[in-house]
Image (cartoon, rainbow, N blue to C red):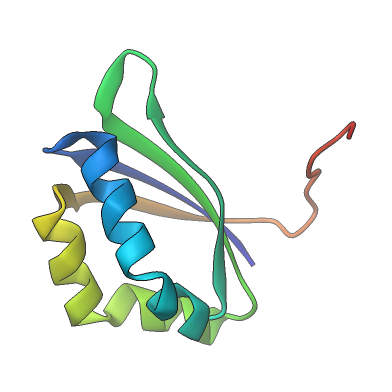
Length: 97
């Protein structure tokens, strides 16, 4: 399942990106992958992430992981601004390659 996440940051994208790399093991454990993550060109504190999870259980484990939520917040993620949208599996990836 694909998920789009939008979120505001307080410390810029680089801090969030470092946190992601430090928590790679968690994402793997949730059977999740980041397809794309980046900040807006005009605003380093506004971010969009496209993720893929093998199943809904992985997504829910990510969403409910208090330790990871705390790490995200410490990296500047304003978690109260998070909007998570489930996307269709009918997607186009890397076209044309």
